[in-house]
Image (cartoon, rainbow, N blue to C red; front, side, top):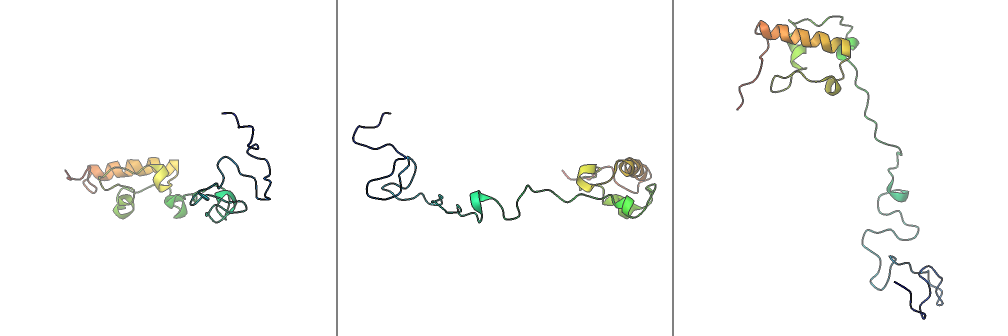
Length: 128
């Protein structure tokens, strides 16, 4: 779309001393609601919508509960500890959810399976 010969280019200064109008700037209808004006912060608290803390969200590193308690091998008779590593449906929770280290996760899996065989833990729940 070509500009008409009577109209100055979009970014050129205006004769009446006002700020230059851009194609998407505040025209006859005013500024957009929630839009940024010159020198504004955009309504998000910081320049360009960044959080004041800066940087990306990094979750706190999970720590293995067995390593903290200095437990070498997980005991299948410790039902209270084993239940924390089971879901509502009776499934073994993954490492990424609970933060268990690989060595203890393998030991935990064996202990849960042994506890299931001697009927200390359920294989599954009866929810339908």
